[in-house]
Amino acid sequence: MEPTRNDPIPHPAVRRLSLYLRQLESFKRKGRRTISSRQLGESLNFTDAQVRKDLAYFGQFGHPGVGYLVDDLIAQLKHILGTDKTWNVALIGAGNLGRALMAYNGFEAKGFHIVAVFDADSAKIGQRIGPFDPDKRTYLIQPISELKSTIDQMGVRLAMLAVPVDAAQEVADRIIEAGIRGILNFAPTSLNVPEEIALNAVDLAVQLEQLSFQVNFATVGAANG
Amino acid sequence: MEPTRNDPIPHPAVRRLSLYLRQLESFKRKGRRTISSRQLGESLNFTDAQVRKDLAYFGQFGHPGVGYLVDDLIAQLKHILGTDKTWNVALIGAGNLGRALMAYNGFEAKGFHIVAVFDADSAKIGQRIGPFDPDKRTYLIQPISELKSTIDQMGVRLAMLAVPVDAAQEVADRIIEAGIRGILNFAPTSLNVPEEIALNAVDLAVQLEQLSFQVNFATVGAANG
Image (cartoon, rainbow over all chains, first blue to last red; front, side, top):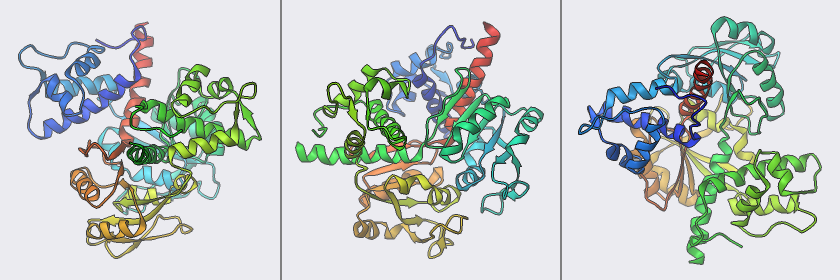
């Protein structure tokens, strides 16, 4: 059963699919063949009802008296998430963060391949840039004007945007026009994109800010209590 | 009014505080002095009721007939989030991702200072390592055994964990024992930490996986519809 636009899937449920998948892969590495919704839930501090409800949006995966077959559910979740195939990804921005993203091992392992890198800086264009790790591949930095022909040629649908805040909206507009359908935005600013474009944002400073709230709050709470 | 542990604050409301703060700073840069809950909400696609409800957890900030004073609300939100002061942060792991975090401009701008870097790799310990950007400072890599004395000395409460998956839980246990109260985990695995420890996770591959779902889903939905 494929999800359709007629069945709205809550965003948090989709996020939890990623967590279930990670956890199932961890169980698989430990040699587990089957798992119950209770065991899967407990490993993530969710109730078994939550696990069953989330999975029920996408189909019936359990087997009475057995639970879930680990291999089977991993394959199904990858199919739902679209990671049973590989994705070619464009990286926009070859600064410090861009170079870190080139080096990050987690992408290749999940089937995301950075196949082309673009930058607006004429001093970088035409150079080969890579992370400081000498074992990693380097990339020829292309001008953004070549984005459309490159992504058409390589079937790129996803882009990571690691450009300065001031450039982010303009670059987003250009890459959407060039055919990008999903953007992972690392610039700490909100972007306006058409409804049909998928957009996720990673603001690393916000993540620390949320931690500082929690640590602060625990202290204040303790002092007041 | 300070939040206390007796008033549970929903986690999504705290996340939205960070968004409100970013947006207010953007309005301030454009010269705005006051703003209504409707205007603040519209700029983020939230309702005005949502904005008022989120802020009401923390106090009464609006002025009848005026709305919010931009400078004032920025200061209040920073105080609530704990970013009206600076935080010393330890970075654990001086690999590719660690070096990218050293280079990321967004942390300093929000008052988060990476003051010490630790690694388990004896080949790195004692070396000075920095990002490839020559304008950036470098860090003396310390062994994890020095964590406690260093963080005591420098008043470090927050740590960023950029270590391999296999080491993540053990390192987390050690840094909590050493006195760290909040962890931003970049290792793509879930960690078990005591209830009083604040934990946030950034899994960059999961972010792309969520995008791939959305792009996939839009295509499947269109094909089925």
